[in-house]
Amino acid sequence: MMTETFLDTWHSAAMTALGLFWTAFWAFGLGYLISSMIQVFVTRKAMQEQMGDAGPRSIAMGAFFGFVSSSCSFAALSGTRALFAKGAGLVPSLAFLLASTNLVVELGIIIAIFLGWQFVVGEYVGGVLLILLMWLVIRLTKGAAPIEEARSQAQESQGDDDGDHGSGQSWREKLASRESWAMVAQRYVMEWMMVWKEVTVGFTVAGIIAAFVPQAFFQWLFIGGDDPNFFELLAQAVVGPVAAFFTFIGSMGNIPLAAVLYGNGVAFAGIMAFIFSDLVVLPVLRVNAQYYGWKMALYILGVFLVVLVATAMILHYAFAAFGLLPSAEQVRTVAEREFFAVDYTFWLNMGFAALSLGFLVWKIARSGWSFSIDAGIIEKGLFVVAMASYAWLIVGLFVAT
Image 1 (cartoon, rainbow, N blue to C red):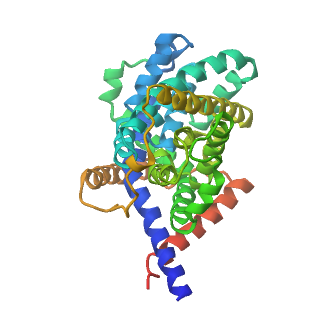
Image 2: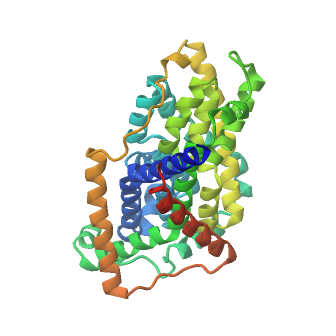
Image 3: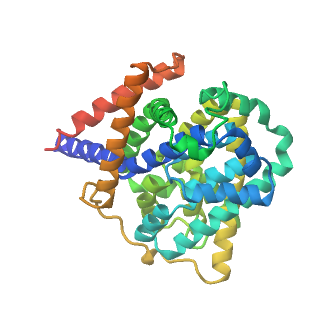
C-alpha cells in the first residue's frame, strides 16, 4: 500500500512538473524572442540614448519594456542582459527585470484566480515599489557595483564583442533583412542552450515539492500566529525567499502554493515576499554570474533581498491601515489544476513550438550543429542532474498504480 502511494505521488510530481513547464513554455519563447530581437535590432548607441543613465525617464522606459515583456524569470534575465550589454544603465536594466517578473498581465490573472484582488493590487503596487527602492539602494551603494566589468562580461556572454550587427542600417532596414532574422534565430537557439539545464532541474524540483513535501513543513517554516507582531512579520518576509528557494520555478508556478500558505496562516507580508522572491534564488544567481560575473551577481542578489523584504513590509502595513488585508477564508483552496486543456495556452505553445523548431532548423542549416558548451565542473554536474531529472520524469509518467 505504501509502495502504491509513493508511485502515485511520483506520477503526480512528474505530471505537475510537466504541467508547469507547459503552462510557462510560451512565456519562455516570447521572452527569448524579445531578447534576441533586442540583441540584433537595437544598436548600442540607441540603447545608450534611451536607457543610458539612471534618470526617471530611463527607468520608466526600462519598466515599460519589462511590462510588455515576459513574466518568465529566465527569459527576463536574458532580456536584461541584452539591454545592459547594449549600453543601458544598471538601474534601468534592473527596472526592466523587476517589471518583467512583477508587472505583467498574465501574472496578475493567475494571482486573481488563486489569491484574490488584494494580492493583485499588492503585486502591481509592489512591483513599482521594488523598482523605486532598488533605485534608492543602488544610489546609496553604487560604489560596490563593478558596472563596467559586468558590462564587458555581459557583452562577451551574448557574443556581442564584435560590435553591433549592421550598425550602418536603420532599424527598418534591419527588420527587412534576412540576415538579421537569421541572427535572431541563432541567438534564440543559443538562449535556450544556455539555460535548458536549469529549466529542467527547476521544473522537476517544483513538481517534487508540490507532490511530496507536506504543507506542515511550510507552516513550520514561517513564524507567527494569527496576529503577528512587527518582528514576526519581518521574520516571515525574510523566510519568504527561503521558501521560494525550495519551490522555485518562477512567480507563476509559485502562486498555487502561495494560496496554500496564506490559507494556513502565513501573513500577507510573508506571501508577498514569497511571490517577489523568484529573482533571489540559486538558479537566477547562477545565470547572473554567467552573464556578469560573481561579484555583480551577488551585488544584485543583495539589492533585491533588501528591497523585496522592505516592499513586503510596506505593503502589509499600508493594506492594514486601509483595512484591505484579505482574510484566509477569501483565498480559494488550491484544487488539482488542469494543465493540458485546449485553451489559449495550448495555441500559444503550438505557435512558439513551431517558431522554436523553425529557428533551430534555420540555425543548423546556416552554421551546423555547433553549440558552445561550458565544460566546467558546475556545468558537468548540472548536466548530470538534468539527465537524472529527465529519467525521473519519464519513469514517473508511467508508474501510477
